[in-house]
Image (cartoon, rainbow, N blue to C red; front, side, top):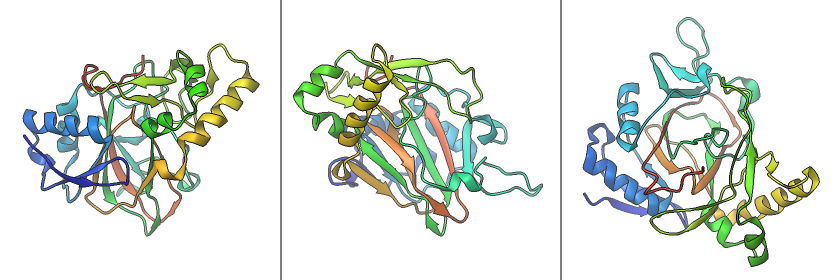
Length: 272
């Protein structure tokens, strides 16, 4: 199956045209993943998907497991999260977002706090806020390519350290992952570092913090970024090795639905 696409950002990402994810099958899922390896981020507009259909899309890419932020779970679906500040008819907060969560988020890669992080994430916009609330992405591929050669040599073989956050209802065990990831298909290298990286194995705290600042300064350059301003029905599909992302500050009502999939490690870079 061949997808029709057009560029999304200047140097990464693509908008997929004329595709209805409600009809996903194996050829469509395969084509989407091929495009994801090339572009890192895909946008599909005007998607109308219930929770079961969202889960079916995620399952087409690979194994899907229960998400760690349990207070965000969709009713009846532990593999789908509601990221929302809306309330249901019993006045229960359906997505866990409070007033404190309306500020700018931390740059992160989904599930980098797990020993086995998810490969592919999806986000579907049900309701976008009146002001702000975009999701910004920065390319770890561009970030790595922009590093000076001595820094590339220094971080080869280095591992970053992570812990689950306060919303993650799993055991708080520290894990570590390679700072440099290599895609098994393209050979492209990516800089796997984020705002929630605690430090680096083998480095003292002060040295690790200085290195983290140096790496993030390169990774988060404006020319490496794309901010997606949501429209209702937008679905984003992204590769967690090629991108880190964050929520931008917002005011108003916001409702996104998210999933995580474990795709074929022969196709995607997977932190070990």
